[in-house]
Length: 552
Image 1 (cartoon, one colour):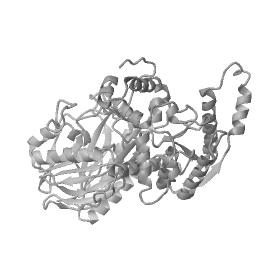
Image 2: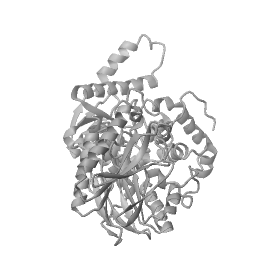
Image 3: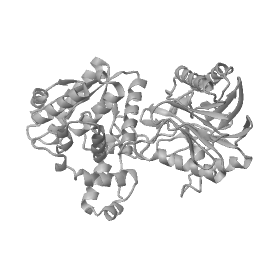
Image 4: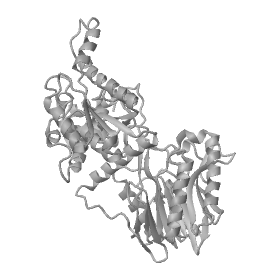
């Protein structure tokens, strides 16, 4: 049987748009000879729908769009497997179920619900969905199809050292002797996820001697980025078909002849991790802007590495004509920073405007001088400059209907080296899940085929330029020390003692960094949404109290 894996980029709640994508893809797959076309988890309504699932009208629309798809594909020679949310049984205590619908020739042949509902990191499915209590295998075209939904394939005791759930849906459904395992998925991207996903499903294929096919969502939805990367595996775990990463795609595989097409060849880049991260950020930025109804963005261009990388991402996401860069020099800004920004803008082909803030800063200082008379200049004056810049960016945003992209990195957000209502102002934190050393790595990747980010930006010492001769290292440890500490503490939850022992950093430095992380939670919970690239990013997947005294 020829199976098409159709990964589309749905928008949450856009039933009309999602339905059109699914019908179009099914028609193309049918034209290529597919007898079955497999779409991703909740493709009809978009993933994740979050509290939209609490609205009866949303679930009612889910029901009607299933019927519209059934009618629209009735004459096609391909069956369709697609994900959607549906009303839950009345006695389940929940409003919805996460369902996979199998339809062919105008008939719904199977409705399979998701059994394992993730409740960790960014996932909160137990809040909304009732779990399946049983699974069915469907006989189709001489095959016995086992249909699973995303997490249902992620609890293999032979693959994971620890399991989150007491049951394994794969192990259970294999007792029904299926001949093909299908998985529809909305599995978000983070570093290393694609490799883990393929190794895990390959282990299942080999252990149960069964071909495995996964159709994964692609696209950005708020902070989450879905990489697609759908694939088919033969029963011996070898790759039959591989869809592209970070774009819509359809790939075909034949379960009988164990053949397929790989439309996404293995990368030839010297730094595949940076390549994947950059493509993910471009996709996440584009979809965030376009799916919220905007077309244009703007950002402050400081002459530093962070804003340079964000500008490059914005151009690749939206086109140079839709990006406005604004330089806002103060009396502390170096001439080099302005010229570096100007050169970057020229390299990217974007509009660059200068709005000096020295006079505004003097006006603010004059207004405050009576109240500040008995004090010395400190962080207040530094932050005031940042807040002036934030005000100007938001004025431009309002006037020209452009979203502001913030340019802070994960290292700064972690330790609070950022200003509320200043450089934190904006709609999206594009690189908020990249520590500073990773920012440099991605910037070098941008320049892999020639200089886009000026060399001077790559080599200068990082500085906020809010006081004379300021350097980041005046306030923070060097980034090659700071970043490993942050990754260990924030992403892996290691203790100060474990970090000190593992890296050999002075205990006082590790303790200083941890104190900064813990005391600045209030800032992060007011930050713009962060595009997720790591297993633990700042945002909905990291929930810590603000009012706390953490002693670890």
